[in-house]
Amino acid sequence: MLPLNNQPVNGGYPMVNATSSAPKGGSAYAKVIEMLMVFASKWYWFLLCLALGLAGSYFYLQATPPIYTRSASILIKNDMQSGGGASGASAINMFGGSVDVQNELFTLRSSSLAESTVRNLHLEVNCYAQGRFHEEIIYGTNLSVQIVPLDLNDSESAEFMFDLKNDGTYVMSDFVRGGEKVSGSITGKVGRTVRTPIGQIEVNKSVNFAPQEITLRVERTPIHAAVNKITSSLDVSAVSDMSTIIKLSYNDESPQRAEDVLSTIIAVYNENWVKDCNRRSVSTSEFIGERLEVIEKELGNVETDISNFKSENLIPAGQSDVASIYISQATSATAQSTEISNQLHMARYVRNYLTNEANKYTLIPANQGVNSPNISGQIAEYNALLLSRNNLLSASSLQNPIIQENFEMP
Image 1 (cartoon, rainbow, N blue to C red):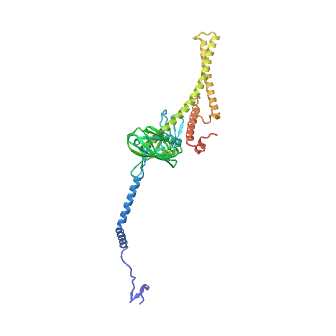
Image 2: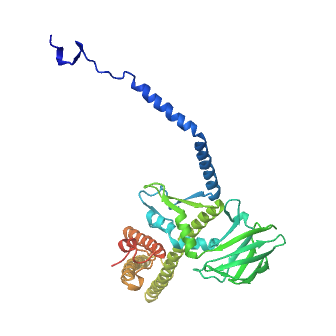
Image 3: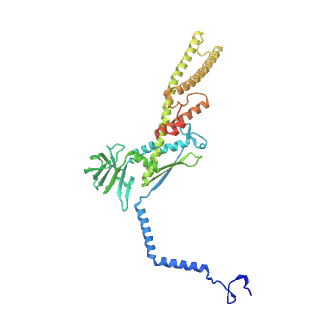
């Protein structure tokens, strides 16, 4: 009898291939157990790596100075405006005219504003005390003396050690100027200016002066380096696209210095606005003075004409007849003629002012007397744009694309 399905036979029976019937899951489980046993036999290596990682993290955190963040906000608005804030990325400023919030952001980030802050707070001079793991910045209430080098120019750097004693005396040593060591050691007393190998240095008591012994490393950086540190640590942004609130954030190793920097930046920014207002006021005052002289002459001529008319026609003073009515009408006509003449003069003045090359980048006097809301609004807008250009130019140059695109006149 032939075998079925052509299967190979052995002794008349079909051959069956032998295969493992053990479940696959059991094999994987055995491998996992075997791997865990290997790991368990090397447990001390894992524990050592964990300990080293934790120790490295700890020392890194201890050796890295902490950074603090302080924030402040500025609201740009018109105090004389009864409505709310302006919409979009512009607002009405306190001196009239619209303000581009983006321009104000650029101004607050400008190096000129940062430089004024550096000079006001003497941020080019930093004092450090040796801590357990790293040098710690000493500033504000923690610093009992104010140290200011007087003879170094803006681009020079210097460094020296300052040892303060309980009796108010100190010793300066280890001088370095421009990266080169300078020999010498100076002894002085707080409140006096001393001559050192790197020039005169002023050492005064701070508001928080208290007798103490402390050793400081005093570092004087170039002005531009201190300015770059402020601009890189300062973040300025609008709260939203439709808001005129500007938020300022500053990062620093000293929280008190961060607060002082923000306060000074805002103070200098407001001071610049006041200067802009004063420039506009001076321009307007000069214009009003000129016009008053002209009006006084015109009014004097009107009074003289009335007096001459009465004398020629023998009209007594206080006459209330028809002649007085004629005089009143003539006076009214003269006043209207004067007003029209004044308006014409104002229009010609504005035209000549704008066409004069010498006034190309100067403010147009406000409140010229032109009875045209459109012209007055355009003049206010022109002055606001000109002030924005001057602020941008103080922190940049004429090659700035923003200035060339938006503010350069043909």
